[in-house]
Image 1 (cartoon, chains in turn blue, orange):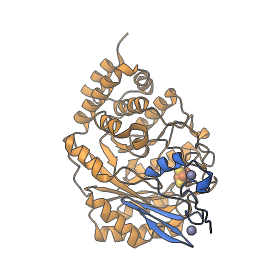
Image 2 (spheres, protein in one colour; image 1 turned 135 degrees about the horizontal axis):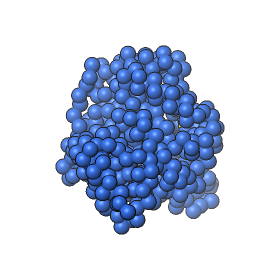
Image 3 (cartoon, helix red, strand yellow; image 1 turned 180 degrees about the vertical axis):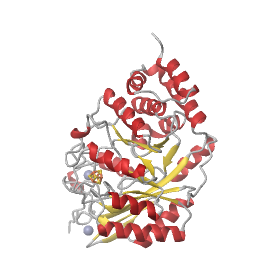
Image 4 (cartoon, chains in turn cyan, red; image 1 turned 120 degrees about the vertical axis):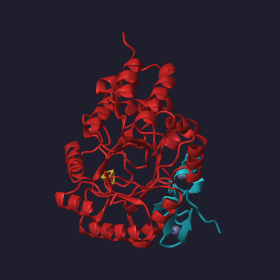
Length: 62
Length: 331
Ligand code: SF4
Ligand SMILES: [Zn+2]
Ligand SMILES: [Zn+2]
């Protein structure tokens, strides 16, 4: 079974790349879209970290 | 013709009188081969009138996104298709962020909310947040909550909020190209009230929003007229979904010229590196700016974007032999 994954910066399918600019930008940004379902995540940035939460796929931290 | 840097040496370095807008423009128009001289003079001015200390600050977003205003640079405006979703930070998380910030050596912690101005829900959260931070951490608390009423100004002052941030963002003549939902004058009114209430005023802006050099100089003159305690300088990082998404970054040399010129307009002000320096200046340019008039930094992350690691800034300050300003809490 083929599963689609998404760019966590722009929300478009990874296969619709290239996402080089997105990857470069992500060095200075938290993710915004869930890579599994492309929902916009709830993101909280704090001085020394960030959390990003998808209502379906849970939380990631950085 | 007299050289603007010779004039500035006498007027600003010796006498402590900042440059006027037209003099700032002369600095911004200097050829690139004079940049080094400009930065060296700006550094001398900073050392003479402010000293070697660097003020370190952390900022956190208490309420992110969903703002009704339309500031064209801002990913937190609810009026554009930005990927930033609305979220509130709870009090324990806020206190944790203040603790983390204090651990870096920072003496300032700024609580920011994406709003036109505070409503009662936000004021309550700020009230509880300020009390909880004061009970747990030794750090000065600043707030940035948009436009205020006189009552709100008085309440924040009474809470012990020692500094209030409200950016004019850009020159008055350029403001209508950046924001249409409120005016530059409305921002100015809030700043006057804050100042009159005895809170320290923090007011800066963003370079690179399509303003001309003349307008950059105009902005420096307007800030000098306000006499803020602190000016945070941001460089635009174009945010996806905003009207300014496709604007180019400010070039490094231009950004450094702006830093040097703003220091000469504001000899005694805390001039802080804020957002965008990482992309616009890189590591090398960041160092040059620290030796060109900057005397304060935001460490760590910003509100919706990330900064470079705090340690990197702290190591740089050590290397430059610039001590971190110690906490002096005025009660
Ligand atoms: S008022 Fe502040 S949060 Fe709201 S759109 Fe403008 S800059 Fe962004
Ligand atoms: Zn992408
Ligand atoms: Zn998901």
